Length: 493
Image 1: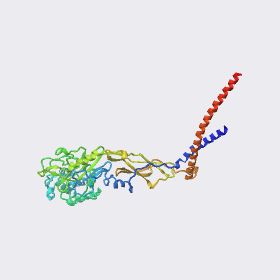
Image 2: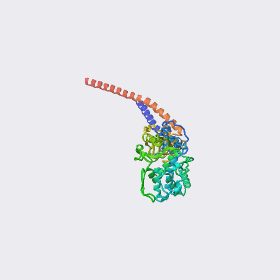
Image 3: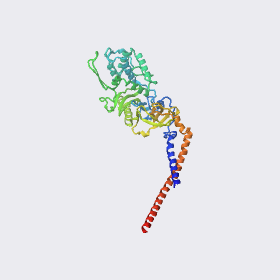
Image 4: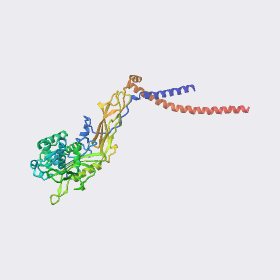
């Protein structure tokens, strides 16, 4: 019996050693990483490059979130850009060069605002606007030779009524001549990052060589709207100019932008539109640029070259083109998309293995990031692609150290790209720790041996304990029976 007890004690000790020794070497093992989605391989290059070349971030993005399939009836080009998330939502022929027409007046306005004194009186030089092309003379504010009004009033004449006589007066008052002002316009668009835009006059009429694109016009309008006075100008639907030295009555102006104006043609009024400009010309068609806001999103929308049809009288539009199709773009943006928070500041993202490290490292985002997504999209529809710095991580790692980059994809468009940082320090395995198990290979080998011994011990030990228990019970029963028989014999004597 003593021999059996010694064997039981020995098996217990072996099992205990096995349970104690395995955790000692657990840090030497590598946990398998989660399986990541299979994504196309792209050269990352500079951080953020993928979201441009293969995604929808920034105005230069090449893969719009909502695609490039034609959704308009007649427009030659269209562009939807969401400002708060820096996302191209939709683009149709975004880089096709077209005549900007009277959209030139937008650049005339912002250059004048930035370089002129809005409260200063300017004087009309009739000789200047009398040299305008015949078609341009028809669109004017009725300015008179020698008439004086403030530059701010003159800008309202130009934008709200498309007045060409106001355009040349503004240019000459700010730069001294139309030619110098055009140079200022082209320098402004160049500084804005436009590579496919050029203007040849200040009003955009009969300008064969002038050119621009939907993407460039979005860039121009977005930058110009950062100026509060420009934005105020383009948001005005009704304005009154006091009598001047040449007029006895005040001029009451109504904007020609029917997306906002409610008195002339209110059926095109669209709730949420905050600024806009919608010129039309026989040689370039119907253009429209506007800003609109809804559900935390702020859009810049551009539409170029929509076709206009007229009634049999030849002048009454039956289909404006730019307004109807602007509605299509606005509905597409307002109804089809939502703003989502992709990343939070301090959010934990993923756990990476660290060579020679005491433990793995947790990566976190240190910035909040939003994105526009389709209204039907869910977070589970997003794909995450992690790229470890320098091909692998080695201890030691310091808290806050950049350790990886993250790309977030929706469908075939990269919607976000950011750097990830270590949430905590990771120390290298100490020499003392390594010597406990020899080298890494021997430590792992000893662990496997102890694991095997532990399993064998358990296989033998458990049935043996059951046997001892059953045997103990049987012996106890037999002893009790013998004790009762002895007691019975004693009484019988």
